[in-house]
Length: 288
Image (cartoon, rainbow, N blue to C red):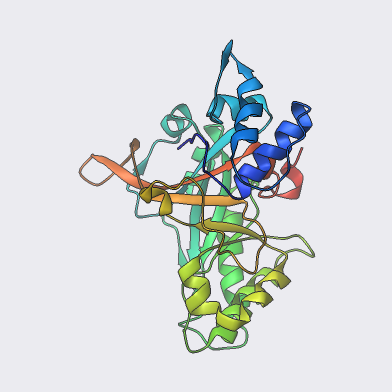
């Protein structure tokens, strides 16, 4: 759930580390997103519990104001969830599948309150189905379905609403993108939301229309499992976004806080961000 960053790592999170070192440690690093000898030397100056490190460990992240944050996402596929145990294992938030298409709704509406009562940050996501509906009003019907579940949850969500962009017609990329944009525009005023997607979905379903996704003003929750090959950062192929705010790094996080129908520990999706990015994901009323 938590990572060390060190020599050879690169990308957005390294840029965040460099900026934090300049701000909190009076370093004068070039913000180039490359963890080289100069970044390593500045990390070594950061003392945590009387120790020094050459890698940006979770302790170093916290010391420079970038506490690492684990966020799980849950659906009805997870049979039993102990949110207090998830919290005790270091998870700070959970995003729960609320709805899909025109009329599917979670059968576990009580989970929203349970997660909130456990002290977790709570969000909800909708799985869009532009592949099933071609009617002009379809995105609004889907948004109404999502809104109904959120209202029934009985809580105020901490995270912005989420649209899961994984379904569509590869031959109708304009419709898939339009669907997503209109679903978001149905939200209150100019408040942004979150789009969950992956590189394959952007390539297959958005195609040349992908720039229009920025019309939603949404922040990016990006799925990239290349950490499994040893890389500790998502791909930079997130066009049209310049930055991601939440990274889904695995779909195989095993935990005894989530059980299958046989009472055995189950696997869940696990996501990563840090304190410096968290505010991008939060509803306006939850921001510090």
